[in-house]
Amino acid sequence: MYRLYARKGAGSMAVEALLAECAAPYQVTELDRDSDNRFPESFQRINPRSEVPTLILPDDSVMTESAAIMIYLADLHPAAGLAPAVTSPVRGRYLRWMVYMATTLYMSDLRLYYPHRYTTDPAGVPGIKAFAESGMAREFAILADAVGEGPYLLGGQFSAVDLYAAMLVSWDPDMIGMLARHPTLRRLYDNVVSRPAVAAVWRRNGL
Image (cartoon, rainbow, N blue to C red; front, top):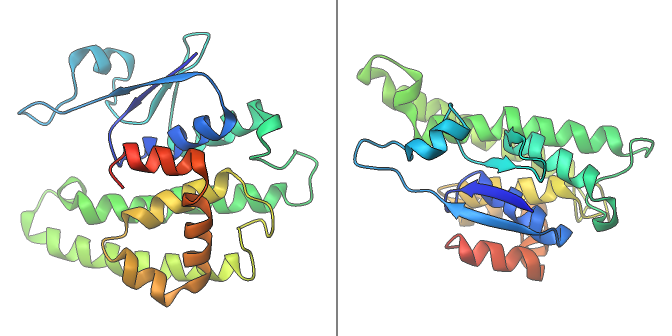
């Protein structure tokens, strides 16, 4: 049994969707912050960084970082077909775009929604948000170009990297406008969220 510590609409969403696609046994513990914007102390003891997603593996070891969790789980459940084999010609492309999104779009989202974390000067907040918005526009354009004829990032093969992309698309404050500008991403997103397992997770996360 996997135990996923999550927050609705957060980085745990793609991990939850992957577990659902794998038909792996799991339970979700939904976390809320207190009046001081902190998670419960019981969770902080599990993950001192107090971040979601946090996944407890069946052997009680702890994993964090959404992209790392997804790469690991997809490899651990090969029957689900969510990751190319290590020897596959598209394995490098799979890892490339997973890491690209984790280090660019995910970080731009954090700067956009939590700009105060990236400066000690409140006057710097507007500039950080503007930088994040321009970064997201550029990074989504690169991702859309990578999808190309697709319909997925690995061509005709749906994989964990598409789940990760769909989550990041859902975070864009102008998702409708962004997808209108990038029809390849629109097609990818629609294909991903129309999958029954993913659709159920999206609904549980309020999307």
